[in-house]
Image 1 (cartoon, one colour):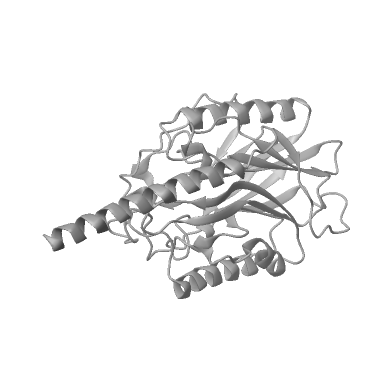
Image 2 (cartoon, one colour; image 1 turned 180 degrees about the horizontal axis):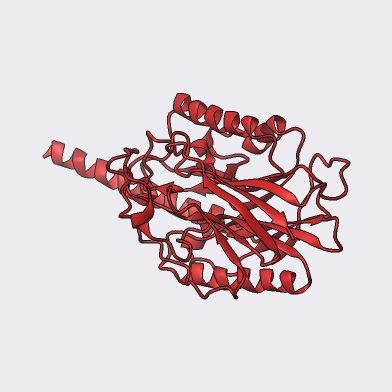
Length: 355
């Protein structure tokens, strides 16, 4: 009888503590809820003297680095796995590999990163923004928050806790302006309190012509039924068409969390499973004639994090790519196969000409 009472007391304590944790998290998240404006001017850090682009030939990379926490040994609870973050030594290994890659690519004109932590429990409160800025000290940069929650209570047994993260764009030329543009949709309350406030980061650059280059870093929604992604695509489409109609060059790069038009999983090189096709394809006629979807059809950019990564069994997909306006010529696009060693995404490189 006493053992039964003890067990019931333990169960009651666990239920009570979990309920308290959830209520406390809701109150805390409601008080400190990140409510960004539709458009916000972003600081341009480490400005450099160059006033305009020095060449019409440009090279850039887009990479979702997964906050240096989703390398090949990791799974993730929100995707059906069990883990929340790697142990500290593994985190340091992922961070070091990503930092080394950036250091080896300091010849690029632009570097667009997604899921970069500024202060988060999941990345051991390391200021990745400052660290990468030190590595890329010949670049100016702008950071746009899209995730700022004081305490994420999930999973209850090992809460993710404090998260502050966002989009980080580096450039060899100082932009005229940097701006955070909010996507208008989000999840319903209370889920929206603990999810990302999605946005895209816009940088404007003078060119040798009487045009601006409008460079956009985006990270579109995941974990929804497709409605948010469709809404965000429409908002992004409206924005870029207006910029192009104004005579500007437009490049959009990032993690779209959906497949590009024409994506065929059977084309990905042998050795990779391609059964992950749940993100959906952007329709071929979504953009007007002349706009270019730039992606490497032969190599996956993203892998499932339901389990640790194995080349022969982990589902992969292509969800990281670029969109180019008709006045830009695509010379090269290449997914750099890093075998998902330090992130659940591979970086994508493009070379373009402004015509």
